[in-house]
Amino acid sequence: LAADALRHLALDERAKAHIEQDQVLRPLFERMAARYIGGATLPECLERITAVNAQGHAATVDYMGENTRDAAKAHAETEEFLRLVQALQGRQFNSSVSLDLSHIGLIIEPEICHYNAGRIAAAAREIGTEMIVSMEWSARTDLILAAYERLCSEHSNVGITCQARLHRTPADLDRLLTLPGKIRLVKGAYQETADVAYPRGSDELRATFLGLACRLIASGHPCSIATHDPDLLDELETFITAGGWRAQPYEFEMLTGLGNLEGLRQRGHPTREYVVYGREWFLYLCNRLAEEPERLFTAVADALGA
Ligand code: FDA
Image (tube, rainbow, N blue to C red; front, side, top):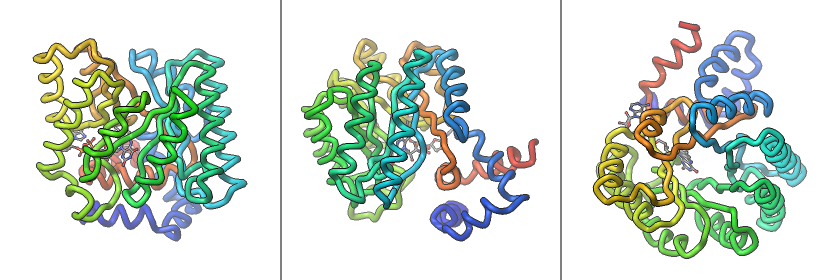
């Protein structure tokens, strides 16, 4: 129930506007979000990346946003990504860039998206880093994969995210493994129906994630295993040790404020923290809380400063 309520809240523009304008609620929600985001501004985010790198983890940074419906806004958001890449170069961070293609024009016009994404990918390549494309809900999978394949034909430093939940993903992986880009495997965060995806928290989803992660690691293809699920991580560590896969180009990746990346690093695995920043934190916060409603208790404690 709590998860459903949070998902509805996340999509409710009126509730969002009310909270953003309310003198009491806004600071409370901002304190809840602080655990999960790298800051509202680029300088705040750079501080977070400095700390993440100092802890021995690589980073990837996402300037939060999706579903941009106006071309001028898509170009303006692209400029912020370019400022981000420039800032990463200035201070020699160990960080890539991650983004939603719908943030920079995908649902306005694929050509706009291709132009904007190409500029960010080229800037990232100049500083020797990657641009990883996030995966959105299943109605967009074909569009995103087509945009990714086109970007791959022009840029060698672009990677993609795959959702283990989707029944189509094993077949998509056959195709993606023929392209050079890094593949990030996640469970999948969007509301989907049973005909396209396994239910959240199901045994089938966990088994599928495990199978796909093992396949990626053993393939020798650059990959990121992105989960906070402690049981899955235990099984994957066992798989890596037993199979002698330590030298493969894999890494474990987690979102800021979730999971135990440090334990993996201490046991010798490459690790990366996914840091988001920006002012669109409301939807992001609701999604994190909806995934694990027990996080509400932590959120309330954060809000009260306890
Ligand atoms: P999940 O949240 O299902 O948790 C599994 C189990 O672990 C649960 O039993 C839970 O109680 C336990 N658990 C979780 N956190 C714990 C903790 N801190 N300590 C102890 N136990 C804990 N999605 C998407 O659709 N498109 C995308 O592009 C991306 N991108 C992305 C990048 C990265 C780096 C990550 C980590 C995730 C994404 N996601 C995503 C989100 C992803 O699809 C998924 O919704 C979340 O990662 C949650 O799923 P988990 O696998 O982490 O475990």
